[in-house]
Length: 147
Image (cartoon, rainbow, N blue to C red):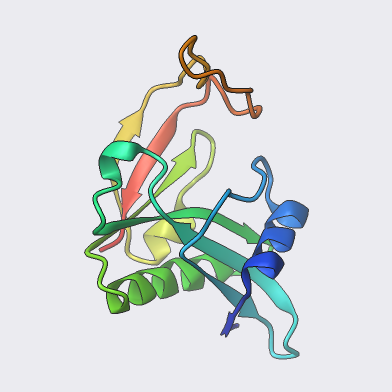
């Protein structure tokens, strides 16, 4: 696998086609891809501002999506590349989440560490801020941090 630059539109289309349970994120700071030896895109990672506002301190980025067609070790390659890119851009912290039932093996393979678990939420809807469900409510999440 080789790292390749990926434009926003292409990354979003790849996520739409291959991600198991989320649509593409609303925005991004950068995206990176993994291609096979023939140049075919096999996986992407998108990094952007943290979703949780208390992490959005100007020094932290979040890997908001990764998606793969099943290519072996592609996500670990991308998690490592995202951390190198974030540091090169001046960020001091990079985080991401996994859901209950996901092993986190790609993150461990890239040297990331599990720092917290988040209990399931009933959803993001509140009377003051109406939100539609995305099919992943009532699912525990795990917070990871780059080394």
